[in-house]
Image (cartoon, rainbow, N blue to C red; front, side, top):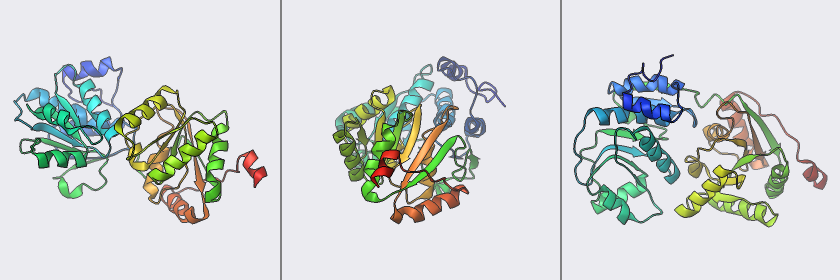
Length: 344
C-alpha cells in the first residue's frame, strides 16, 4: 500500500492531510489518485464514507497548484456537479480544507438562497465551482457563469457517465451488490397504516442511538415527523421542499446529537455525511434496490457496527425480493416491538 507521498501528492497537500489527521489513503484513493494526476479520465464507484471526495479533490488541487493561471470573469477552472445542496456544500468544504495551503477560490452554487451573492462571487472567476444542476443552469441563462475555460469536470453521484468519458480508468470499491458486512439487517412485516406506530416503538428502545429514517416522499417524511412529535419524540425532516436554513438546522442538530432522529428522502440524504449513525430505518422500502445499499451504508462507518431495519408492507414485498436478489442474501425477519405485537 502506497502512502499519500508515494502517490505523488505535493507537500502543501500532504501538510493539509496531516493537519486533518489523515495518515494513509483509503482503497479508492489508492486506485484513483495516480491516474487522475496523470490526466486520465476516471470513473469511480464507491459507497459514502470511503473517501471518494478526496480521491478526486486531491489530484485536482495538485493540478491547480502546478499550473497557475488567471480565471476569466464568471469562469471556473474546475466544475463539480452535485445532486443536492448538502452534498455541494460538503464537497466545497473538502476542497477548502485540502487546499488551504495552496490558496484556492471555491464557490458553491445551489437553490434556496439568493442568486445575487453567487453571481458576485463569480464576477472575477474562481478556481472551483461546486454547483447543483438547476441553479447552474439559472446562472448560465443569466450569463453570470461561463464554462468555456473549464478544464476539469466532476459529476458526483452520477450513475451513468460512460458516454462522456474518454478511455477512462475504472475504479470500484465495495460495489453496490456487496452489502456492508457490518450492518445487522432486519425486516418487519406490517401494514402501511401501522408503520408510524411501529417506528415510534422502535425509536423508544434505549439501544437506538442516532437514527436516520428513510421515506419515499417528501410528504411522507413530514407526516412521520408530525406523528413522532405529537407523541413526544423530537424529529426533523430533510428534503427538497425545506428551505436551506431549515435543512442546515436539522443537520446541525442531528450531527451534534441534540436530536437523534432525522427523516430523509433518498435525494436529500445524498448530502448527509454523519458519523455515529447507529440505526437506519427504511420506513418505506425503495423501489430501486441499489438505493437500499446506499441507505444502509449510512451506518456501520469508521469501523463501527450498525443496524438497518426495514418496514415492509404487503405492496412492498416485490421491492424486498429485488433487494435480496441484488445483495444475494435473505434479510432476516424481526418481530414487531412488544407493545405493537400485543396491540395487534
